[in-house]
Image (cartoon, rainbow, N blue to C red; front, side, top):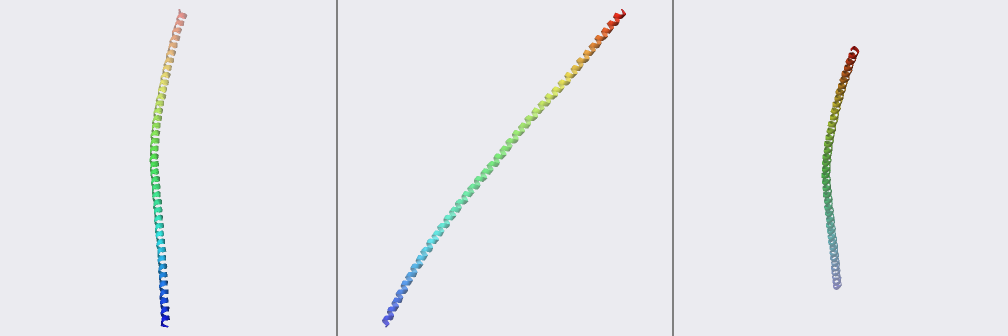
Length: 148
């Protein structure tokens, strides 16, 4: 019987070795699967970080482009406002000159009118004096004719 017990022990050892090998293979397979999943997870993380970095770069570029466009728009707005102010100032200056010229013409016309009126009045007075002188001379002649 010792032989039978020995066979049982050898079988037990063999079974235990077989189970240990199976467990080692399972552990190795699980380790390989875990390493593969870890590698996949790292790759996915790296891909996600790369995508996020690309999106950040794209957003920075968009922000920079918008900032540049805003600055350009602001500069153009200032230039347009300055041009409009300059044009308006030029128009105001021209209108003032036109008003001054028209005022001068009106004053000249008023002065000419006053001078013409004074000349007409002087002419009229002169004509009245001349008529009085004529009437007076005719009266004198009539009196001389009546007396003579």
